[in-house]
Length: 240
View (cartoon, rainbow, N blue to C red):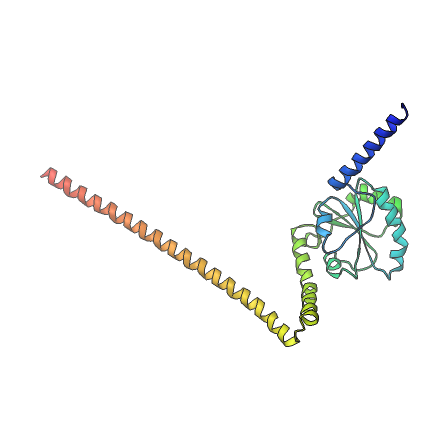
């Protein structure tokens, strides 16, 4: 009994720790697969190391086991993720990937690149923990994890969304290219007309409000002048 009680307590503690880790989003020791759909959600959880790779890249294949070991090494400390650049082109553009593999560290709205250094487990772990401070972050407009980067992410996804919509309309909807082109022109035209209507309505409403306020001010001034004239007449009569 004296042996079973500590074991049972340890099991309970382990289960609670794992449950809290899942709920709180503590790095689990596994490499996260990033996509254009989950990128912002994952980056918002905390500091994250990202390996941008390509399936055909030999150096990427050499880094893969080290990257898996790095996730285990940094369990509970830093998220470790990877993204298939050629597959998720919009995300690769957002990360400004120029070559494979590219190792990036995202934290507090800033992005740093791990470059010109050994890709060993010890060096990568040290970079994630402390030595990232020695690396200058990329310019603000290149960081994907701030408000500007999120806006760029939306812009980068537009061509892919348009291509997907085109395929659906052509293959599933059986529409011709002429019809699709007409719809593509019709939608922005309709949106533009709605914006013009809303702006015109806002301007007209503002003009009416300003006119009403002006009439109200004129009425108040006229009433004040009339009261002053009545007082003047009354004072003149009293003096006589």
